[in-house]
Amino acid sequence: MEAEPPLYPVAGAVGAQGDQDQLGVPDGPEAPVAPLDELVGAYPNYNEEEEERRYYRRKRLGVLKNVLAASAGGTLTYGVYLGLLQMQLILHYDETYREVKYGNMGLPDIDSKMLMGINVTPIAALLYTPVLIRFFGTKWMMFLAVGIYALFVSTNYWERYYTLVPSAVALGMAIVPLWASMGNYITRMAQKYYEYSHYKEQEEQGPQQRPPRGSHAPYLLVFQAIFYSFFHLSFACAQLPMIYFLNDYLYDLNHTLYRVQSCGTKSEGILSGFNQTVLQTLPRSRNLIVVESVLMAVAFLAMLLVLGLCGAAYRPTEEIDLRSVGWGNIFQLPFKHVRDFRLRHLVPFFIYSGFEVLFACTGLALGYGVCSLGLERLAYLLVAYSLGASAASFLGLLGLWLPRSVPLVAGAGLHLLLTLGLFFWAPKPRVLQYSWVLYVTAILWGVGSALNKTGLSTLLGVLYEDKERQDFIFTIYHWWQAVAIFIVYLGSSLPMKAKLAVLLVTLVAAVASYLRMEQKLQRGVVPRQPRIPRPQHKVRGYRYLEEDNSDESDQEGERGAGGGGGGGHREDCADDALPAGPRPRADQGPCRRPCPYEQAQGGDGPEEL
Image 1: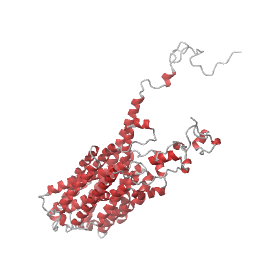
Image 2: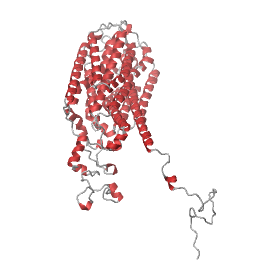
Image 3: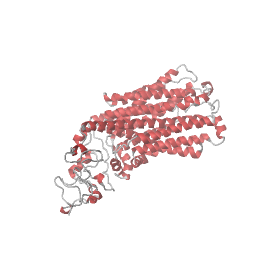
Image 4: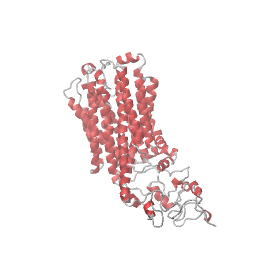
């Protein structure tokens, strides 16, 4: 009985179909046989080391893209906010504009409530900012805060109490979360750039070994300089609506300063005696809508920059670890960090950092600039401050070669000299002879502000490298800045000499306290930091099969290695409490319960090596 032919022809055998296939290639024993490695093996010219180098180069370029996108997004957001608020307050100040456009709606009362919402609401930010950052994540917190800024811009299409005041309160709630998450984001990008630049060292040390202390400091200096050079440009961007739109409608200084008697150190409050009418003609509603639409488009562009170009600050497992320490602990940890003497010594500098920015925008720009040069030159004075601060932000790179205290103390010393000079200077109203002095003062004040901001943010990123603490530290920093802004808001009616005296005392106290902190660190005084609880994962799965927790600090890792794992850690999929050697099976002694992933694979735990 003849055997039935196979259903499919056997490759390489001569059959009834002939010795050639449809393409004319011989298919018999004499046909050349291609080695299997040539078909499924590695590419013959493949260079693993070169591909690895290209991979990490792309990673580093991605980090640079994140830094530039976050910096540009923050600049556009703050520039739109400042420009709109400045234009809005000038228009609402004019009594003719109020009466014609809004009648008896009580626009000054609405403006005062709006400013109260912006300046008072951030006082409560210490209670919710860490929780929001941990809940949404650093990138998404930035995106949501930028969206709230855009919401504030959109409410100016219909200026009513029920639109302006609630949006101002929401904006006040978003101020501290936005800038705390921005500071945390830039610091994390510097740490990532170090990891991608020294990937070979990381492979040799092991994935769970942390890099040496201070290793990311050079990259952090560069990234903070880039960020603040962009950020200080926001003050110049905010003046574009004034320069290209509102200045065409303003009276000159002879009208607006007609009743002003004293300026500078002799002035009291904010522009006492300033004319109630500052607009020659009222801008058309159509033109206002066009300007507000442009600002709204820029705010929307900032949202897209953060959403589309900013990558995540942490890996997904790290985000879960940061949340898993418990919401009660997250709420308490900012207050527990007060134990650290480094933070206590830096609090005066945090407060001064808020004072000096508000003094540049109100005291220097209004009490000295507008009071003597007129409202039409306010924009150019703030542009001078902005450009000086933006260019001087790169002076923070001197920390690459000098001790870290030099740029910070140099900026404080420059502000000290300028404050002493302003304390004894009272320019005359409507006199433009010494206008160049004001522009030089604004530029130099911007230089001091840049050294202050860059130095403080870099110092915090160097002192607190643990990723589980950085959001708490930057929250405390920007919360104290918000407290300083609130104090300035309360004391806006004080005489200029009182404001300068408070600024001077705070500056001297900040420098003395900071130098005291550096002295303690040089003597080897160990700061007392609160312990970060170990993550308690409620979800078990394959992502927690690592032996070491990705979120533990060095001290906790040493304690865990010496004393074994805790009860809470035994519930996770990591089995680091077992001794070295072959692992016992579940029926041989006490062991952890297998994970669902292991149960699905049909095993009782990790395979024996």
